[in-house]
Length: 359
Length: 263
Image 1 (cartoon, chains in turn blue, orange):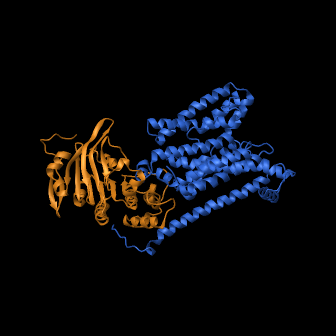
Image 2 (image 1 turned 90 degrees about the vertical axis):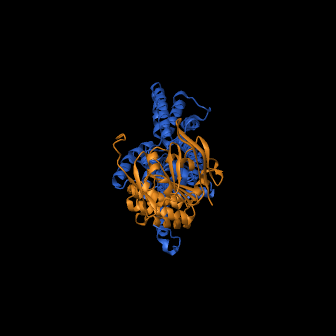
């Protein structure tokens, strides 16, 4: 071992080249996932009881973007008002759940973490049950959405409050989330015991998660929140990388772990809660997409986050196609498909991968 | 020239005092080793120095600036810490692990300079052959070399290492300590190492601080600190200290029968 600063740059090209090459491979993967996403989206718009070809879909979308009035056309109505919001909803929700999952896993140093780890899903479920069963609305006229959103962010605020009393470690956060989850679930179940069969069915449907009710206004809200959230998480990618290797190491490398973890938690909670409040609890995407992407291109969050986003979008898009077509004309809630499809696929990938990607 | 100054530092865990009124200043570049028996507070002391722990009272100042008042990122640009071991939940290549050391200096993207520095320190720590290996598959000794490389990649003015040779074999122990000493003098940086092996420390340290009873018991060059009397007082062990190539060398002696046996 010796100090030698005299190395010429040509001498040390090997690491630089291999590093740049790996980055290029990851970029190609992300770009190809995005292409697949686009093609699948176009194909998805042709599916349904009203027959429309891919070419027509393309024309209709181009015309709509150009601002041509198509109000007379049934095909245009079907594509623009019925199918497109749902397809875009699948893309945006899949991407944002996957981003939240990737960030949550890195930040908590826990491969089991997902966007719902902090009790977001059970909080949202409680809020939705309140609205459906008792007609209770926090802000009158806003229905399920605002109720679900407000109760979904309760756990994060409880943790924020507790962090003033003692340091919010990942373990403390997760245990806190779990205990709130039990409380919310217990109360939701109590409500369901006393509810009418119709309400019960609506609550169940909501809890499985579905894209069928997403419309253009919902989409605007979800998209704005997701874009802001993902830009922030992407900006924090290097800090997330450091959080994976332990708090002491991260701090001595310049990351204020305790504060940063809370801030990222708040951002993830807001993003996941806004998605959940419009679609219900779509499970598994947030847990699965980051893990699959990690096995394919490593755990560096700078690439894991965009990679998970496009992969999550494709996954949810495909699940939505299956949900719409498998027992057509009946549409399944997409959450059923993600879970039924995701479970075995995930297990296959874990078994196939001889190298352990996480412990 | 960088200077780190510890003044009246006290630290207690849950009300039990561990460090009481620790005072010292390091202003000369070189290899400073901290010795002392288990639980005396060696690691606690260095963690107070790099802001991982907040002392109950007293200050640690780098060039007159209190580290508790210094933002972590500014501190990370000047001071690196090499913990005893690193665990990552998710897989990470050795190259990526060493590259993390560049975080305080680099922007969002990895620059060519980051990669050049990384490649240099990896060669220094003989890690080139392991570059693409997953750090979770490494042996404890290899992991420790990755950690040291990460600390070097940080290009610090003050490098703090917590028992950096505890998992290394004798060859790497000797080489690492020799390297740390020459690196410190060539770069003109302060390197503070928590040690446990008296002879390795004695052979390479420019200055040794022996902790005992919550404070610095002895402080100085190896010749004045590693003595039979000090070792008996601090470790409660009998020894004979001989001279090997100008450095004290400790030979531990079995306990005599007039002392109480066992624990």
